[in-house]
Amino acid sequence: MTDLSTSEPLAPTAPTAPSESLVPLAPLGTKFKLEKQITPEQQAFLDHYGYLHFENVLSLEEVQMVRDEQDRLQAQWIAEKKEKIRGVPLAYGKGLNHEPILHRMPFCSEFSEPLRKLLDDVRFDPIKGLIGENVRVGHIEQDGVVMNRYVNIPGGVHPRLGWHTDGLRDIFYGRMPQRMLNFGLHLDRISAKDGGLRILPCTHLQGFFSMAFKKPYFISHHTDPNELCVETNPGDMTVHDGRLWHRVAQSQVENAERRSLFVPYMTGEPIIKDENSPTALYQVIAKWMRKMKGGK
Image (cartoon, rainbow, N blue to C red):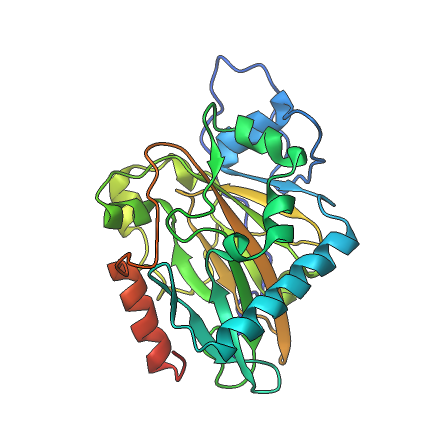
């Protein structure tokens, strides 16, 4: 198995903070508490590095509810032999016992009232304020709320996810990249050896050329000397700018599983999906790559 984290990632050389800002910049890797308002320190951190990490946003009971809803929807969609939801392909593969599972499940909050109620809770209102006014959860836009499951078994089709940005996805919808914040709710204890989220801080400030061509999308899995490993506990939330380069590293532990929930916060003109929506080109390519690994 490929070792993707043989050494500690190096801190990147970040751009100079805006001279007009008098807010001290917290050290890279700082974990915050989500309060009723985003603090100036948190805002400065996001503007500078392109991400935030909040601890203990969900209770352990809420974490279990999300896991239960993922299992319920997975069982239902597999039984119904669903291939797509609102034009977005489902990612089939094998679980820890080689049973059929879904690695990627889009639009989950549209089919789970408890999940949608959780994500619309007022505790997340400060996140919307990070972007501005008229911000919404993209429940039925683009890929909607996505549940991910990474399983590290021999021959597994989804043990990791290569380097990419979410900003370039807008190009497939015929518009220039919009500012979009994704927040991830993490359902497991993940340390560096367990794989997990890796980011390149500050790359949300890059130009379009770097966003499009800095790395080969999804097929590059190499450790970057400037990457940061985001280590999480169940109930933690990460926020990252969609234009930030990031990946999910493969676990060094065999027969390991990692679950997460990603929710898009949207601005601009809505791109609403329904059951007649066509499959985007990048999703066709991703499905073809899964088939090459034995999935579907």
